[in-house]
Image (cartoon, rainbow, N blue to C red; front, side):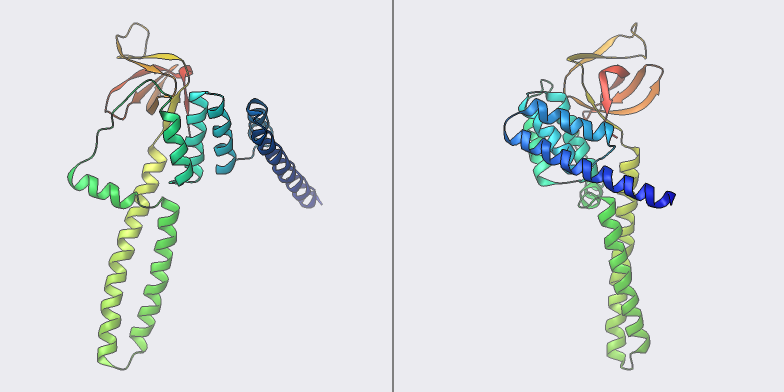
Length: 248
């Protein structure tokens, strides 16, 4: 009986969240962006519902209101749930044009760049599906090899199995690499209009750089009310934790 009641409540919650989502979409279409933001935020906070589409629409609403940090933050949230989505990436690019800071990204070179370019083709979930598919084809090839009577056919199956095995190893490696990257990356967005990055986790530390609203940083560690961050150009320092909001 409890399970049936729980299922009923769950279905009701999902249904309510969906109708609220549609209400938010209607408000957005009417140009009532602040009202749309409120509806979308309520879905996240009260109904505990999350989806790439929800964060994407919320980010669009904030963008229309010229609220830089919230728009970038929610586009990043959408990309966590739906990596490499072209529309989200495109809108994020436009939102970043509203930021003041121009932080260059230190590009990887040589073999490290090749590895990053390869593993970054898909996210870890997609690599996992590819690995399963390759393993299944490998199994079929092994069965064909085992039952084949002709030498030529056996050679073809053997070569195919070797190629598939290499592909399987590469896909598993890529998936593990992307999973590790996803788990260890802690991106955050600066929400304060102006925030100082200091050399030490205290106000007495010398200021290294000033960051403005919408800047993206990566959290490395936390000490009290301070977070050690790294910028895409390699700059490291400490920032007041209350001035940033972690994406994940």
